[in-house]
Image (spheres, rainbow, N blue to C red):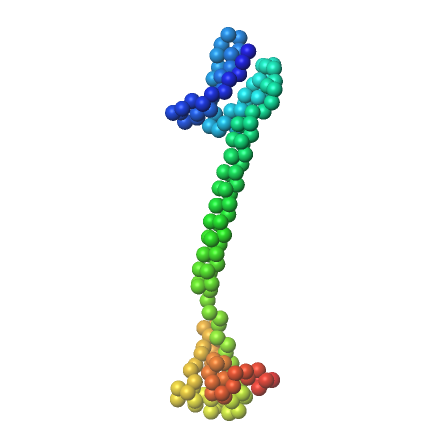
Length: 161
């Protein structure tokens, strides 16, 4: 009894294992050589065929080549994923909203500018400062950077205390 391996060219599954059992010939096709050789070893053990003396060098080189190809494909996929992640991070940075402007209530701005809140409302009407309103409140606000520009200072946190 013998179990043979062969390459069948021009087929979707080129690796073929043939064996004879009780005067009948059987064939099975495999997509990869590794699957075919694994099946061949199982069939030889099942049918009680004497073990071959050793593993062929060709098989070892082929197996190492397959492993190398898979590693190369994995490295390519990892590289593509890294590039994709970098592109997504860049697009997220572009999409990110600018920070909300810092605002002061009229009473706080009047305190910092050392004018009365009535005078500040007058300046708002004249267009010296721009009104800033939030949709959920009726309170009028002034942007912090406009107050800083009017005072000529960078940081007015000390004056707010």
